[in-house]
Length: 223
Image (cartoon, rainbow, N blue to C red; front, side):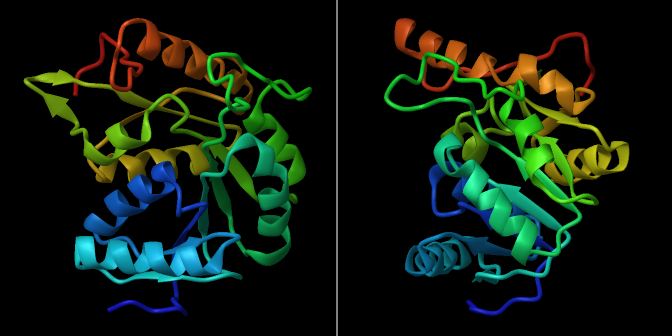
């Protein structure tokens, strides 16, 4: 059943895009309650209906959302505006920021903001009491939707999680791990200044070596 008003725990803002839809689909499949948020309400409703049909779970669409967790999947150009709306309208405790410092069409060149990373900028924009966790910058949307924890006994690719608040970081690691992805607690938010610039390098590899979505895999860790 689809609903336009949903008592949700998780809001995927920018969920009409490829990455947002992929994350929302995985969350719905494991039974998490969620809503799709977007500046385009009609597309948010359309995406929610599609995800409801695909997962047999009730996915909602809403504007102002009372939720404990927001997953922001907006591009760099609209990150700040989206974060300010989150701070004003959404009673969230934690925000997962997936923003990559890229400005199309030059997706093989990093555009780090003055704060050092998009995630650090996000934390500075949001009001006190909302904790930012940076994740998903190094995983292609279609791989986020499709890949499993292990392929032929080997971890295919990892999601890196960084955040200043330990509890926020661990809660995101548990949530994403429950969705069948291997996510690693990678330390404090300032380390996103190293993690975010990996994305344009992966894009370069994709083109140079004709790879369908390269990723990061951390070795030496048992599944």
